[in-house]
Length: 369
Image 1 (spheres, rainbow, N blue to C red):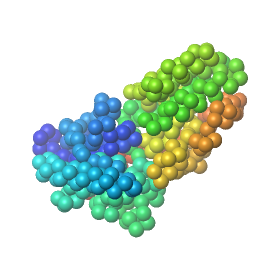
Image 2 (cartoon, helix red, strand yellow):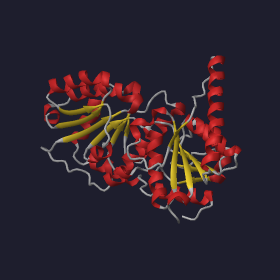
Image 3 (cartoon, rainbow, N blue to C red):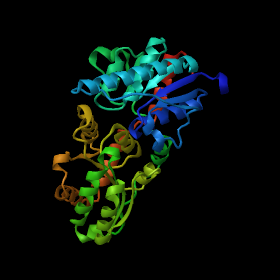
Image 4 (cartoon, one colour):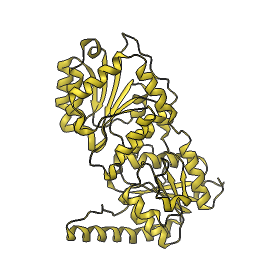
């Protein structure tokens, strides 16, 4: 395939959070390696996640979340989506992509609607065990549907659904090559704690207190890496200092996959990217699904990994310092348990998902890989 300006262009559309963009980044790397050009269309939230995204250009789009209730609010939402779709039509006429690939989130709606109007092939990828609302709006007219889990798509749409698995970033693929760290009675116990943009506060509220309830023989060995919102960071640091627990806290870690690979246990939310990356790297986890996630997708994601033996699920209304301390004590008292959970998680990982998705994109776009 020819490279450069004449290479076929694939336009990726994703909401501006890590959960959507990490998947798009993984596909983009494979497509670029195969000789495609890649552009990204997203929203203003993207700045934290674009460091290694191999896009030729990044295009902003006007979009909004569909919400019921206030008629004025709903009218404004449709107005913004309409403006975004109109601008996307002009963008696609200029770019002439061979296909548009959507990864969910409402910023994907305008470019996907525009592609439909212009008869450009479309593919949606849904990472969750339950299809997201934005993708459900697109699924009926999409040329193809790629899923991270089996039976994500509606039964009536299964004829155009392919389970590719969830693509993982190159950093995750590299981290997956690291062996699970050995544990002895005297070795450090390394924990990674994170909750994403919507879940870091509860981790700062619950986890330090739970670690303080552990027996000294475990607490003295702890090494913690924890994502903490700026407004929670000082208090969490003070607790860890008082407990004499070695802790590294920050609002964001650009090298999170490597930190996960170096850990013995992860405590976090269960967004689709998180669950896929934990499985790919092969690390045990205690997952606390976001309770108000749309369609309970985080609970479905976590339950899928837990059913395979690769995670422990604690619902948020049960996520207390006492409950977490009890779970950790049980795990740390059984030296064989954590490596066994890690092995079960690893068995669920799909490191070739980005390649599978790239194959599907090339097929739908009508361009030989």
